[in-house]
Length: 335
Image (cartoon, rainbow, N blue to C red; front, side, top):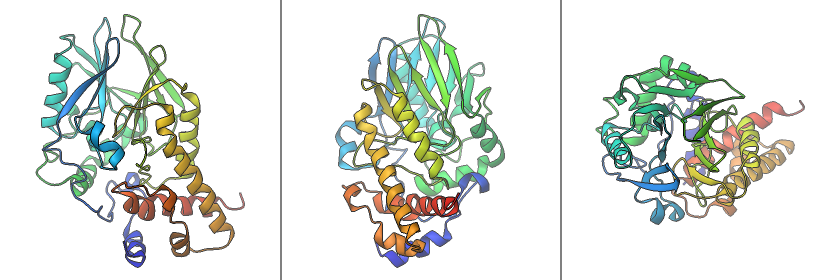
């Protein structure tokens, strides 16, 4: 991609989607990034009564650098079910519920949204009326204020006619405050921790952790293993960098990790994200110390060592990750 074009596109980007409801963003190299009208979902058993729900393509395409649709899952306890993620459109939601019902007829007591991005929460409105929705507290506030704008943002990236237009707002019933966690006992020794570390990709992040089973739903902060790089396009960098490391350090080496958009992996599998962020931090810090402008930094901090075939590498690195790193590090200089 022409670097002058990248710079021009960056100047059009409003740094925070969450402050405006919708950002005028540069388009990725392909729209839709993945097609909600074509994705097929399948079930993966992770532990007794613990399942991941993922696109059928994750095993063959994740390591090829092809962007994948959202992963979620569910946990079955004696009392009922906790659903993790309510997907982009009714077509995917119906598949999700069919997979749940292939395992259990117990009621869906809780539904967890790990982000306020629409592919994690737009079908909340299709849940049973007595299901309790759980979100990060910021996610609830942002969706309440900017739901229509977030819908337009999702249409921009995932296309018209994908069922996004039909989404209606349904508020969360339970929220998790920043730097806090909520523990849910589903019965039958199924204990789930919902963790809000603060911004790890966006201020709306929520992690799902089962300490006994060592199963972790990573959401958007850890999109997928190599060659995927993180999507730090919500206007933040230094706080995500710190929180990504905090979460990584929290996890045991033998944790089973369901990334936000990739095949099931382990702690070693998500280290690529951490390595990229740490290297970007160091390289941008060096550029700022030299007094380089954003444009000069984009020309020098190309991070080719991490450009290993991910389709969205240039779009994310030059338009979002690097500019947000430059902004935060420049603002933090001398503090």
